[in-house]
Image (tube, rainbow, N blue to C red):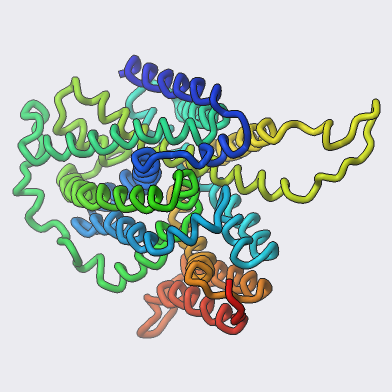
Length: 467
């Protein structure tokens, strides 16, 4: 097992080293010189989407949601399909990252808000992925939590800062293949009897009484609507999704990649839903439920495959999120300070500065260190990931789609809409149930209100001049 993991991690570093030789400038580093094929972009989308919360979290939710856990990825596929009509305009207006698109649509004020809000939330998401990776490494190796977190953070931070987007596109394709193959193999052994030596529970016994798909007492149509609002919309207007799309060589390639990724997610969604139901039959387990399923149904020689697939689940989201956040930070401090102020020995400050590539790599390193420190201090913040996504959705989904529809709004109104939507979404996630007939739905009402208020503010500030 340890040998397989070591070989895998070394291979990722080898890919990064090869990619680094081809990185010549910022377009190479941030968007792979906008030359990626549909296969590369689709693979990166699948690998990024099938992150720790999507796979590990969804399967862990089986005891409560049962077959309805299938909706996590189905909603993601719907979100991607909804992006296709907007992909051409987004590709045209975007450059390196989501705030570039926001500035193109609305100006520098809203861009500044986006550039401040997104990296904070996304650094927390990177930390959550480090936590998940550390716990997986602890399951399959003798590493302590601290050592496992440091190993995971070092590997994905290292290959991200070495080759940037070129590294990520190449490693993501490999990781997407490993993830899908691992899930299919695991589901196949669970479906067709598993490993008799491990006394895995019978499939018929597990399926009887499991919460049903599409809806059950723990997952109603209202829950699906809220999942679409707070989770699905991040696949239509999320910074990681746009960062993948901006790497495509043209609009047609971007649209083909998005459709391909959505098509892959649909069957994977049902595989995840099946594993979520199957995992319930194992009773109480230590660690991630998916690892308990693997230990119950797989022959020992296949355990390393699942270990590599699960590690890929986490690393493939962590690297993209880390780069997305770091690109936004770099772009935030990039634009203004090109003045040539005299410095010592006749040099100018512009000439004395580090190169843009070096600066980008330093930002990635510092961002990775901060995320690692968060992961070492807070060892149970996976829930923060979904919190951050919900707040992001409430703040940015409506303004981004508004602009991509060709509508305009005054920059001050856009900034207010982003802040108001984000605050209301945060309140919806944190607000306890209040007394009264609708008290149990207080958070749901606030979440829906976030989107409504966001749209109303944009409508009040609407400009009628063409984009």
